[in-house]
Image 1 (spheres, rainbow, N blue to C red):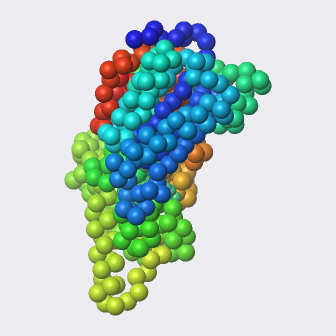
Image 2 (cartoon, rainbow, N blue to C red; image 1 turned 90 degrees about the vertical axis):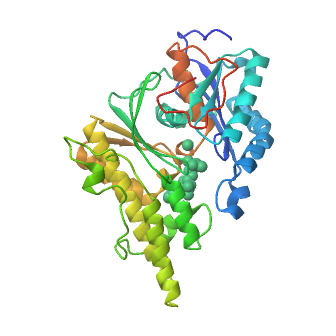
Image 3 (tube, helix red, strand yellow; image 1 turned 90 degrees about the horizontal axis):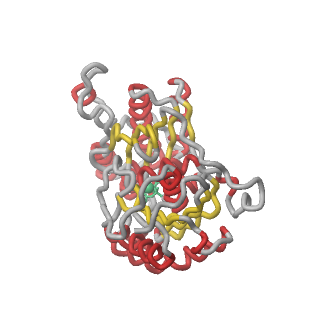
Length: 376
Ligand code: KG4
Ligand code: ZN
């Protein structure tokens, strides 16, 4: 194992992300973004209506070297220049994670660089520290490398994607992350994808529903908000165990029933109204629970991450509810909200700067890595 690089200088870190269907390579210098190259295998999953793990793993293998080359070229550096290599160790699809992890170990060994196996969810939060304006190496001969900014005190993160729906409290990116709530069944993006399939809107479903909902009436159908009954939520003094958790499976069933009723009656399915009402139900329950969890845990800055952060209605309602609760909302650009390597590099740089010991080259991929395990 190589020693941790000096914590005194701003570290140049290469980040590798392969936990789902995006092969992401990012390069940062501290909090300055130098490159964020992503190759997605989404097109290959379209005909299956969801990510097929084996196809994703093979696509990572094929995309890895060209994506790495492009990121290094964009940043104007060579592998020997970096101080450390960070890679997503989990959570995610096991086979997909293994491709990135094996590649990272190979690079670390070949170039004699320390390796940091990091948590994908915490990396989604770390990206909030990056200054995207500095991409393409603009800062290299400009004002000099950015320093190591820290997250504001009492930061929280709402992560909503095809793979996760979580609310976190982040005391410190490198040593203190706590899971406040998560979905107990489908992830929010998964609910969008499955519902879009029911409505014949194709994959990925999120953007399709977002677009269809624009012409629909969000009050046309009253779809259920999962885990919002008092028995699940309890009271402020005696909270139920699902107070800050979500469930989207009942909502999906309710949409299926509504579609069936129209089809059985031989009437056209009101796709836009169902899409708008479904979206309203998802966004209402996500934002209500996130803002309440934030309030009850003293969170004053909330960061939004994950692919569903692209949803217009989610951004709008979350902004309204955060403002009403006195919470500052931060939403990174969509290219940094979806899975990418820059977020992994950003967290890696924080770990290096904090003097955290590098990982062993023996670390395994952990498909269900808990959020508290920031690096392994
Ligand atoms: O973070 P992400 O790119 O990675 C995975 O989880 O794989 O998120 C993808 C998810 C998909 O489920 C997609 O349907 C959803 O994000 N998504 C959206 C929107 N754009 C993407 N969901 C709702 N509204 C959108 N505009
Ligand atoms: Zn993700």
